[in-house]
Length: 249
Image (cartoon, rainbow, N blue to C red; front, side, top):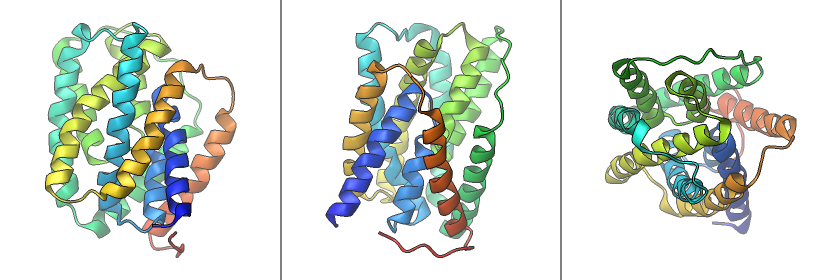
C-alpha cells in the first residue's frame, strides 16, 4: 500500500468523521474513495463500517462527556435499529457484487439529488412507541445494508420521536449507529468481507474527525462539502454503473 493511499484514506476519514458527527452523509465520501482505491463495492461497504465504528465510539463518548446524551428515552428505537441492521447486514454479505454495484450507485445518485432539495420544516409530533419501533427497524435495515446517508434519515426521523435540538439529535444518532454497527461489523467480519488495513487507517481518520466534530459548531463550509461529495459520488456511481472507467489508486 502506497503512502498516497494511506494519506487519502486518513484525510477522507477525518472529513467523513466530522461530517457524520455534526450532520450525516460522510459515507457518501468514504465509500467512493474505497471503491476508487480498488476495493469491490461489497467489501468497501463492509470495510467502511470499521471507520463508522471507531468514529461513533469517539463521538458517543464525547457527547456523553458533555452531558448531551440521554439513553433511557431511546432504548426502544435503538433495539429496533439493531434488529433491522442484522437483517440488512445479512442481506449485504449475501448479495452479488454486480447487483450491489447497481443498488449502491442508485442510492448514491438519489442522495445526491436529495442534498440539493430544500429541506422542509418537519412538524414535530409524538408517535406511539410501536410506530417508532417499526420506523427505526426499517432505518436499521437500511443502515445494515448500505449505511450511506443514514445520518440524514436519522436526523429527519428524530423530529418525529422527541423534541431534540441539533446537538442532542446528533448525540442520539451516533449512539444508535454505534449500537447497530457493532453487530454489523461482527457479521461482515465473520463473512470475511472486511479489508482490515484499509478499515483501520480509515478509522484513525474518522475518530479524529468525530473528536473535532463534537467540539465544533457548524460554521459555513456547507457549499464546499457538497462540491466534494458531488464529485466523489458522481465519479463512483458512474464507475459502478460501468459508464466510465476510472483508474484505481
